Length: 408
Image (tube, rainbow, N blue to C red; front, side, top):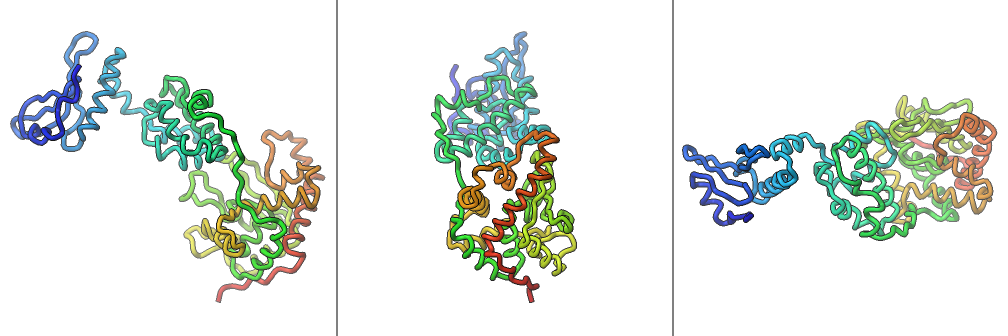
């Protein structure tokens, strides 16, 4: 069967010539005689030998390549014994990979999946209908990061496999899952996974860094200081606005603090699969909060900023300040948590009781029993309080906090 008979150079003339012009492979350019309106159609016979015609679209909006791709997909369906017209209707309701991802995560939330998929997968295959995705498409997604960002590739591949598994259960995808490790490993090779770490500040340099930080005025400096001495994640301090993520978090609120017990409780998140997490406040952390509260910057938000619509700190302001004061352009705000862990393990010798450190890192086990949770709230919580005080003492040199003044 001859295809691609129409040459691109001859197309303009054909568009002005009434009639039915064959491109081969059952694809035709139809130009009406009365008004010279041109459209692409596909003519074929169904299984009962009945003539059929499918309108593929107007010639002025469809490129030659685009219409040939459409015709090729319909010819493939005909070759498989399917009616192209029925198959075309089915494809019209087929979700894209991005739409499938959204539905999958709405029903089965997985922390971290969406960010990895948006960063590494959607730019390549997000627009494709899920039934057209092949192993070759998945290979193209992962080839740039398979060995250079092995841990990211590992997590992202698991996310893609999960979305495609969901598509299979919905009968949108009828082939073997193209994102399994068994599918990709023969082509891309072994991961040789090296866990990617966040650029951190050596703990020996932390007191000098904190001394500089505590001389800085302003709510950004106090937010960064609080984040470091409580070993918190940046998202738990500034929150994650809904405009930036489909799974938003609120910024730290005064109502999250138990002032009598000196405990800050990070709210739980169903989307992230997290329970509320209590953080014991050291003397330094508690004093800092008392000073911020006395300023009356906002009745609810602790580290309030007028620079954003929601009142939360900007997404990079703490990171930019940390890099400026440290002189390390690649420093990651999350890296301060690595500094904490190294200090706790090596200097305070908590490596022998790693569970205390891991819990202070908010690395909780999924499925803790009620007895285990009670233990963590009780005697175990006091061990965490002791460690957090030792950490704050080291970081700040046990000095008083520089008073925070309102901007004049």
